[in-house]
Length: 461
Image 1: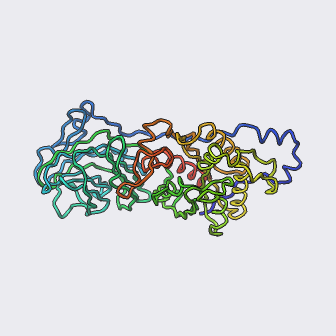
Image 2: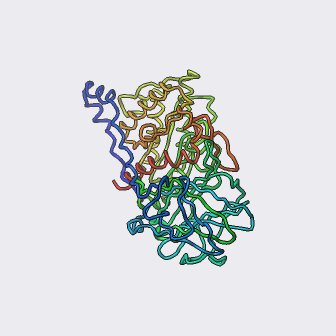
């Protein structure tokens, strides 16, 4: 898959343009970014009152009480109760599904759970527990869901857990690409990730939710069940494309191998090569541990990717405001590299984009503007964001503007705690970070929609 490069203003045109026109072009406000289309809500159930149909459509073993849906109540060994989704949902090819889940199971010799399956009985996702183990699965035998014997159990991935807690499950279902991206986290102010990944499935749609009493007894509770058609779905248009990812720790992932570009690539069937490094800057910070981003361009493969996704500015904000290493600067009135002021952020950014254009002329460049941060000076963030949008417009760079188009703002302390991390907990990003590095929830809820929307637009253009 290849995408035509957006045409740049030629040097000849710049030279013959009047000074007045040039001044207007360089000082005009940046064009606003296209916002991400809103999700289409298909189900949004808080169980604050009785549902229609009753008990969320489960014919047995279910009740709504205390603001939650209880399932597997009083059910015998190897029995099931099935909720069938409306026919309109069966035709959906991309879905986001989330819910809160808790188990009251009290013995390690008992197991209850739930399964999501398609019209042919193929597994989409399953979740279960004993008193000591949390279990989830994306693969397993085909089942009619009339019973839940051992022979039809999903292929479980197991981990220890605290059964007294409520857990939040977030799923991105793509039946075009036959992929499910999942995360399971504790539902608390500083969430702990229990599982996260992307896997292949054979299911072709979402048909039913199955309450399974595998053996023993144990009531499960479900709350905040939300299903939506994502407004940013790519519907397979990005599959097979290649992307190089450059920038700082937000792209690299900080201490975690899967940054936001990885999450998008996993979902969409893209191949990603990361060159980003923690601590990298756009500007000339000689003591920056990650060096300048232009050095990543220079050392990267010369093979043409379909996309180059990059960020910058986060570490520059520290250099500009806290250390006074260099200033924001202004853009050049030319595309001649000799006119760039490499002692400033703006000039260095232009040099970086120019180097990308020279090395990968067929690639579509996508700049990701990071979220609003409580860990950086606000006025400096605004200034860097403004000059970056101006540079993007001048050089024909697509902007995935998380800063503007997402609601992530870690100046709000609750968002800082919930959506950012500094270190790993059990191998996954934790929470309660300084406000800089998005954790899995921050990535999937705020970064992935914006970047996917811009990449899909480029693929369709």
